[in-house]
Image (cartoon, rainbow, N blue to C red):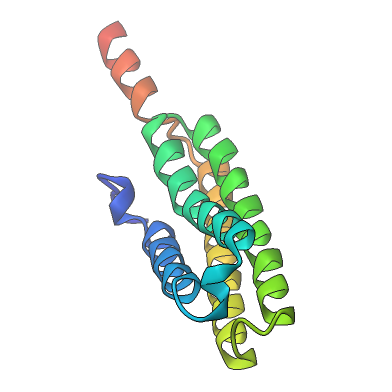
Length: 136
């Protein structure tokens, strides 16, 4: 895996940002925009997908990052469930829902791959690297 300098370098965060923007475009148009409760919920859950990646990365330790990635995974599923409600209420087309479901599936797979990588890595995280250097 390439060296990652910031959370913005992570492909999973980049995909999550696309999801968040796609959701925003969807919820600010048509009948969907008038369902204030669902708009608020799905806006928060889609934002939480990318935000948890950023926050976990910022903790600078693999265990904490993995923990936040599990929140990312859960938020992606929450967003998917809310999209089903939007589809059932006819706020979007079947084609659009399938596009968003595919994007969420891709984010879930990328999240799982990153969790697996971090879980098997000998590197503990940046905050431990700093401490180890001070010892030596």
